[in-house]
Image (cartoon, rainbow, N blue to C red; front, side, top):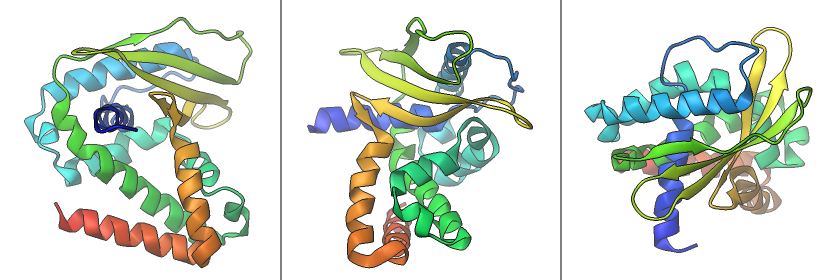
Amino acid sequence: MNRRNLGHMALCMATALSLGLPLTALAADEAPDALIKRLSADVLTTVKGDKVIQGGDISKVIALVDKTVMPNVNFRRMTAAAVGPGWRQATPAQQQRLQDEFKILLVRTYAGALAQVNDQSIQVKPLRAAADDKDVLVRTEIVGRGDPIQLDYRLEKTPGEGAGWKIYNLNVLGVWLVETYRGQFAQEINAKGIDGLIETLAARNKTNAAKG
């Protein structure tokens, strides 16, 4: 993937990771494409109006993600899918560490790209799903300068408390986030085990934090 596409991926992921910045409550019966459309429009408006976020303030971005993004994402499923078969062998404590370090990695990797948000808008494509589907694909494009950027979401309908649609995977420019990390994580697990993967993620996050 070339440098231009990597920049586009960073921008898309920053937008995706910042979903939910508005503090409005989500309706459990809100359609998945309507959810993505509303959140995408709100986040672009919020980022454009917040110079601190545009400056890549990590502490503010992480606080916002903790408070508003996580309720809209099945992050446990996302992490488990990225770790692959090794997830089932991990202890509860190891699973929690993996989720924590993976979240920090994603947020820190893409927070700086928020500064690139300027005149983009989001176009949500027609949803191809039946009314009773519990797993859907919502396809969108980020439109602005240059060619449109593909950004697709996989969502699942969750029952019970906190019912509603939850994001569990992202497709940026034809590349699925979970599958991309699964290959990287598998190499670490094969070489060093689950604890080795945790240590590698923690070390990478520490290095990124030192860079500011």
